[in-house]
Amino acid sequence: MSSLRTVLMLIAGVGLLLSVGCGGGSSSGGSVVVGFAQGGSESSWREAETKSIQDAAKDAGYDLRYANAEGRPDQQVSQVRGFIAQGVDVIVVAPIEKTGWEDVLNEAKDAGIPVVLVDRGIDTQDESLYATLIASDFVEEGRMAAQWLVDNKPGGARIVELSGTPGADPAIDRKKGFAEIIDEHDGFTIVESQSALFEQAEGKNVMNALLLRADLEFDVVYAHNDDMALGAIEAIKGAGLDPGEDIIVISIDGVKAAFESMVAGDLSATVECNPLLGPKVMEVIGQLMDDEDVPHRIISEDKLYEASQAAEALPTREY
Ligand code: GZL
Image (cartoon, rainbow, N blue to C red; front, side, top):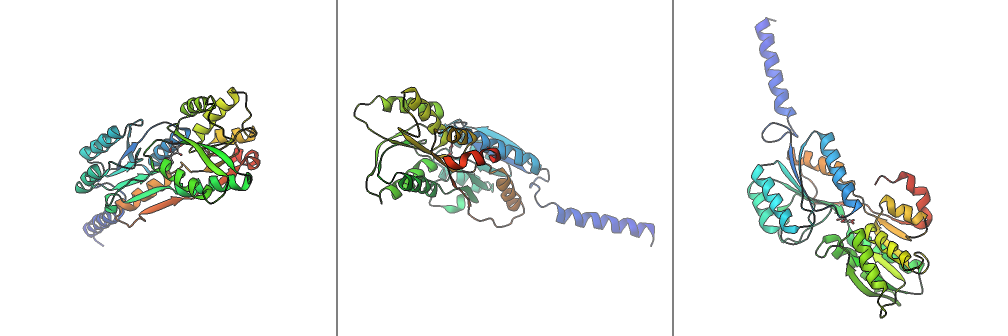
């Protein structure tokens, strides 16, 4: 074989390799640019989610641009608009609220930028505005918490609900699922429901105020996340009461501090809601960059843990 022919064959081979081997790369040919619009830092769950997405992007070799709206919905919409202006390859959003997304997601669609919703859903008539939603089933989480309660307090209960951020998908659906189950059982009533914004300090403040109310009697606290439950537990102890005995506290998320609280006998149960969504998000981004179909809804599996299981599970908790 002449050396010229060998060189030509090598060039053709390299060309072929390049043409089939660039799946997963950005339209510009460099590494995939991902804009991630996080909604806040209100809970330990969210800190774990942020880290998971940042770490997984690094492992995948993607260029992650990170914005955090710290609980301000308008700011989050502007940050998504900023990513569109930068021409990123894909936008990942953890929406603070369910509403207010149609305009900006239409702009992303017009710009040809796929959107991946992570951890919370949105209200829209147009399902084509996002490629997929990767999140837990929050109605089911609420049902699991309520089921534990009716099984473990069969005589009934007067329940205070500490709800999450108003307008947020998990706050709406955790309320709905919980109410659905307790409504089927006599003697279970929600005597008060207030938002504590998914924050521990706010959980403590709200519970302090409720404990001072002479008109309110309750023996259960259902918190939409662990941070608010842990704040409520501080307040209950501060009032000289025994959480787990005088007032039963149950919540959702399954963060490490919740397991520690269960081992200490304070929290009675928590429904795990996995924040380690990064690897799944990056897998989906890879598929989108390769023009593969992705399911429109990807549900993370959740599971309830009660205090008796906490000591054994604690060493294995990853967040
Ligand atoms: C759930 C997530 C919720 C967590 C909270 O996917 O949106 O928001 O339960 C968090 O702890 O702040």
